[in-house]
Image (tube, rainbow, N blue to C red; front, side, top):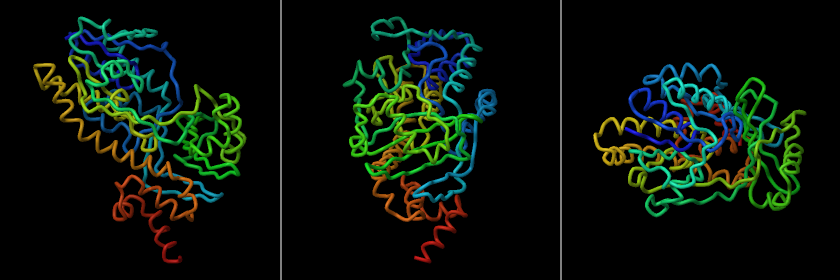
Length: 376
């Protein structure tokens, strides 16, 4: 089989590696528009058991990635100078560039030479392939070329966010909520290396307008965010890497394939950064596509199987992500709650955690929360 993979992010790299490893005679070509070693953003976070979902089928890749990951068991919320930890909520993170480098090494180890600086201008230039795997991200050429055929839709959240890094390492995945005279901000921050952290700044549309961010340069916006979160940063600077203000894009496709083209990762769906599942979803898409192709002799049947098997799982998680994002769009209102009610509202925001599960998962937090309720 001759396969073209468009996009050298985690999903595209992992599919290329996995298929070639299991089918050495296959011809797999991977095209990435950016240079080798280039990436945007800083760390990526994995919820719960990190890469343990890969352990059974691919322990070698887990063993390559795991030593580079930072892990913790609690979430810390900071509001009005007070803090509360929610125990039992495990996360792990790794630098995005470090993850890509490891996956690129895996791809090369199975005999694929990724083609960097290779911009695919049109799908018409990809004739002769049995299968085209579109792992080309939020602005997918393949999806945008066949919007109607895929049943594609793109909407945006109203909140604005800018993705920074910082040299201050944080003990846990933390969120700091700050009210200023002109509006409210939230920072999602967590370490992804011993000396580096992601620092994602978010604000509602009214705050963004009040600060005039639309007319600020990247450097001016960064300076404002450093001032707003000066206490949190403790003298450390923010680090910019294409850190422009964005609205989170909600991408969904009713049909996951068209002809011999199939979508995976952010080209197919997006899950809000507040649930930490985007990279994992892309890798799981690659696994599901591989298994479907191996289960069916015909490519069309395999692509139909991939969608049928995977779509309900993704839809459930994306629904939870949307519910989580809805909470963030109202976070200035939630900030009016006292600390413990605020924390309870936060941890139950996706609708997937009830009191019984919270008692089992986070007994220390739940004991503190229930004690505060008795005192009120």
